Length: 498
Image 1 (cartoon, rainbow, N blue to C red):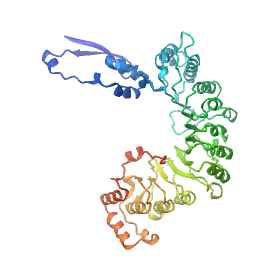
Image 2: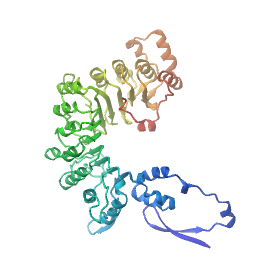
Image 3: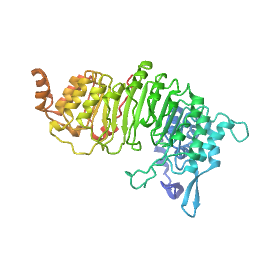
Image 4: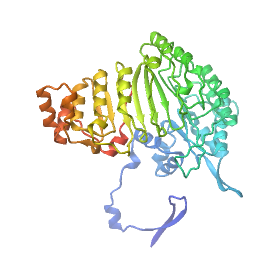
């Protein structure tokens, strides 16, 4: 006799499944796993990586997993997505829509809302759901159990808030098109109300808000009132559409890391940062940042370094549009910047050797991380004079403290050996194996002051990939290898080396 049951497929459609009963001999010999006996610490870690729907389905496995569903650590991170805590509602114009279910949201906040330590708002196009959830959470945080419908503790443990606005309203079928719109109005009002009720924030991340200048000037008022001494990390990427200095960032006395777009900086902001405990200033541009960049002049950086000599600046470009002129600095205006890192994560832009040499001349004394990320598909010449080899070696000579070097361009094995022998403080070297040529370039004899012994060493080890890797491993002090395309694209670059 066959038993059957109903289950949901990937599209949440009900399917009837026949289940054949095991014979007595099969039941006797069957070996069961011990997944129901996992310790709480592992169950909490498993549940913490699931969204609400997945957590619910996992809680149906057994009694022990149902108990883990309600453990505090399971709900440390709450992520709001398009369909989180929603129900289907039919609309004659648009068909079925996902609408925030207030009863379900209320039950969630009452049961586990007090355990939230990190709240993440992913980019979502249903602004009504986003606005309603922020208002409901704020209302619970304000009531704190003073009536019979709420419970105390909502928002008290929240240490991190990340809000990303989907500013690109272009056709979703064309990923390269850009049509920018900023937030504001009721959404901005709801966000500011939410930030006002999170009094113990340690990390605040606001990405791609694209505000008008008049709205951006008062964006951080509530946060400044509550978190002047508690905030440790602040991220403001594209907070405004155009150049608008945000003086609020200089109010947080114990701020350790500030990630900000250049349009939010000016001389006054840099001078204010000198009176804080800031250690890492990340100046970041993404594909939505304006083309025209503004950097404060040398006078402001000098004053900042006098009051805060330990601050390190990191320049990063992420997914930038195709651009020939990137990371251009004027030595008369920007040579005093304490540049610690330069990172380009863009497969569409080509960095010229002259640009690399300028970076070395301006920031060589302080530069420790220099990375070109991304898998560039552009044609790369094999001729030595048109490659980046000589410029990279000059960078290593002019940057005695270089610690990390990431090269996505075509180079030779001889160049890699020359890099590790020149950069005495180098610890991390990342290159693409497919773009490393097994070659000892004759041009190095004309431009390099090599001794006969050094030339023979490079010549002997550059004619074989395995010998090259062994020689570099011996110099760096650990087993080193060239990276595959997949490994290179997933390689992380650590900027905070202090």
